[in-house]
Image 1: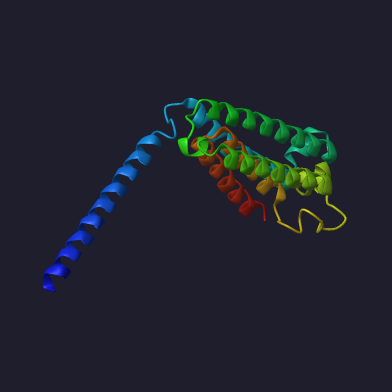
Image 2: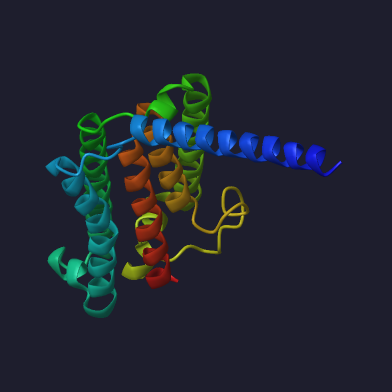
Length: 214
């Protein structure tokens, strides 16, 4: 009886060791195939990261200067409406340039075997994120108008009443979260882990911006 249990225990131990060795091999293969997911030697990666951090920093600083000292309104001879539209055009242009730098950075980065090996799943998710993100951004702009979207309250341009319809009944910051979803979707579409890292930076800087704006 003792010999039977001893043999069974040895067999179980051998199976456990074999399973552990198999797991080690699988993990080693996974790490090997996914090694170097982000190429930190590419300057385009850092330029994109700087642009992502710069944009909300810029518009928050300028908006506060306007609120406290009418910086832009004075530049436009006291016309706060024109000053707000000028800032809106600047922010929009900076956003386009940031998006260009983001896509350029992705083209210089390696793709992930994990993302590339499941193209249907990653692409469907990517398109869904981009579509939903754009719906949030566009519907928010439609609901707020140009001055409501681009910091008009800092210029003393206020809306008649708070907007509570879609998409503001879903989230209080549809522009920020919609933009973030588009960044994540684009990163998945390209299959670039570096894009996911940069999209996470977008989310973080928007969270910081919300803290200043609220």
